[in-house]
Length: 487
Image (cartoon, rainbow, N blue to C red):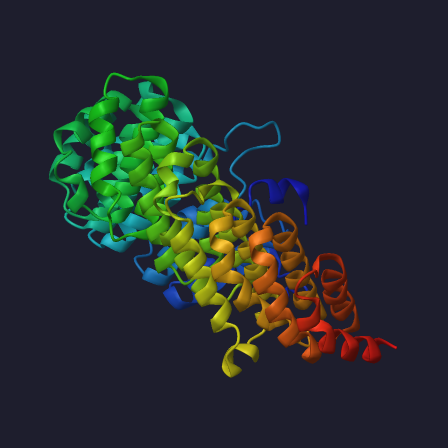
């Protein structure tokens, strides 16, 4: 593709052009009195220009013979043509012919058909030549009060594009006009566009509007609420003058039914405040998203945010540990691992250890069912749970007795990794808690004969040899049987 043409091309459509027609052939068809012929010729011209052909002489032909057409298909194609056509000379100056286009564009901006008005405004958003836009400013501003929301919405974005490209001084009345539109606008998308324009071009007006409407923000649509949250973060990072009132708005929106709004509110609260009340509200919103959203990617993102909150606000998070554990119902092993890392990292305490262990035991039992064993990742999840119970009882010895017999049932599992984990767990209990030795060894004596894995069996025999004293007679028959198996 010609480099100079590509520089001005914002539309890419593949076209098998074969042998390109001559300028004379296209010109003759563009000059036709039939709109259908004009439309076909203009469509071919557009596709050829997009794919690198150059027809500089046809610009004047289009201005003279095509711009006057009222056919809707021709109008649509003209919009694309004005977007992609090369508008400057070799030296970079705007072509004089493009000034003639302004009259056609002004007529389209005042057209009775709202689609033509709106699509023309969308075209002007992509125009970066002030000499084209200058004579059209009045018509653009007039469309801010158009009867149709499609036109008003695009008029707002056109005004914003002009101000963003050339500065507020070219449209000094724009902020006031946009503010007036914002006060009376009923269409949500138009309202959002107007608010975004004010936020980026006249922040004080945007702040004034939000504060005057703070009680109504929670009843507005989610796309507008997201824009308000963007302003809140932007303002609160640079000034604390309105921080209290803005945070109140965020608190009200945190319970929104929109997941996007709830997530942004929680993120904003964590970023803007360190008070326990704000962090608790944010964590609650994250936990609600974690448990209610079915998308695993959303769960992983929320878990990452909860991990960040945990690092700095562990005490606030402790009371939510059981709610976070509810995410274990998700079959994704990645989600389950993150849940375990967060909860067992520092959130388990003497106040909640009993509930945590009881919940982990229930999850272990769930992995034993016939249907559960057919689920992919069930074994890995069981190992994860056994390690979690191991970690919990290592910190809180009073919970060991309620767990050890349940875990000993896994010694007879065909999965060697799981059974080995259990042996290491028993070894730690026997070594650290002498009061548990007798009941563990008694139960082990009843189970050891059914252990299928030689490595696990050696671990059990080592426990008997190392710690059996008064109970040796009790376990001797089992030891003799196991020794015969190993030999």
